[in-house]
Image (cartoon, one colour):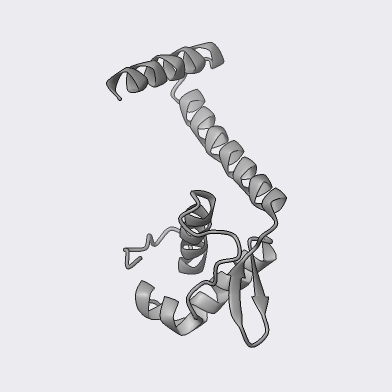
Length: 125
């Protein structure tokens, strides 16, 4: 998971986003134990305090839970994970639509373009 981080947002939020996306893609499964703070810090090449803040943020979001003396685990609450997935989908769509709107595209043009893109993408697969 050793990646470059952008300077535009805090590292702990970028790391939280990466972990969250891995959970939602089911690369990390409900109930699975996350690496210890120290292990994740080494793996990500960041300060352990940054990882601790990342885990705290994920816990605040209800995506992980810390079990005293055992570590940090991905929640097994499927409804919570589904809600987070839906929230992320909505955010991504909102960013896309806003960007297209700023370029002067109407809602109908955006929808037509998206349908065309998805159709072409599907035919290439």
